[in-house]
Length: 353
Image (cartoon, rainbow, N blue to C red):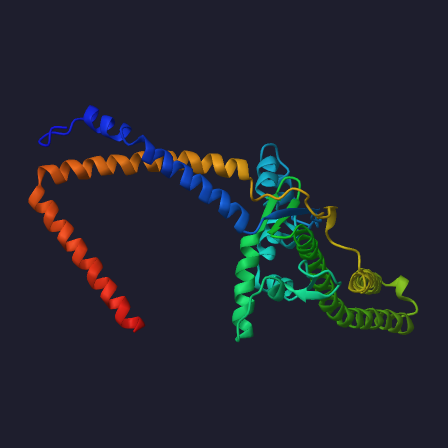
C-alpha cells in the first residue's frame, strides 16, 4: 500500500485481507447475544379487553341535530368527541385513568400469588418485583414507574374498546396483573357512580321537601280561594283568579313528581352494583414468551456484528495508513497513550493499597 495515498480499492483490499477479524467479531457478538438471551429474564404478555358504557347526555335540539348531521357524526365518533357522551365514559378517559397515580398505587400494593413460590402465599408487586427501599413512598414511586413500563393501553374510540397488555417475567403474573387492573377500573367506576348518585340524592332530597311544600302551599291557596269565594263562577275576575291558582297547583304537582322520580332514580343508582364496563376478554397466561426469540436475536446480532467487524477493520486500515504517513505523530500518540495507561494503573493501585 502506498503510504502517501489511500484509495478506495486499497481500503477495500486492506479490509478484506482481515476477513478473519470480521468473522471473529461477528461470531463473538452473536454468541454474546445468545448468552444474554439465556441470562436476561423472559417476558410474557397477557391482554385483557373491555368495552366502556355509552352514557348519553341530553343536549339542546340544535346541538343534537348538528352532531347527528351528515358527515359530522362520523368525524365526531372517530375522534371520540361525541357531544352526547359523558366524558367519564369515553375510552380516552379510561386511557388517562389507567395511567393515573391513584390506580397504579392500588395496583402495586395489591396482593398477587408469588410466582417464585410453590405455596399459595400472596405478596404485593413491590415484593414480587424486589423493589426494596427504606422510604416506603419512594418504593411505591419506583413500582409505579415499572408498572407503567410493563403496561400498554390501547383504545378504539369508534367501538369503545379498551385493551390492557401487561408484560412480566412470569406468565401467570402477567394475567393476574391485567385482570386486576380491569377490576380496579370497575371498582373505581362503581365508587365514582355511587358517590355521584349519593350527592345527587342528598341534593334532590332537599328539593323534594321544598317541592312538596310548594304543592301544599298552592293547594292551600286554592282551598282558601274556594272557601272565600263560593260564587266565583259568576265573576269573570274570580274565574281568572281560580284558573291561575289551579295552574299553580298543577305546575307545583308536576314539578314535585319530576323531582320525586329523579330522587328515586338517584336512590337506586346509589345502591346499584351493576358494572359500568363490560369485560370482553379476561387475561389468560401465555404459553409462548414474547422475549426472548433466540433465532431472531442471533440473526440480528450476527448481522450487526458483521457491520461492526467491517467497520473495525476499515478503521484499522485507516489508522495504519495514517501511522505510516505520519510516523512522528503516531509515535507521540503511542507514547501519550502508554503514559496515560501507566498513570491510570498507578492511581488504581494506590487506591487499593
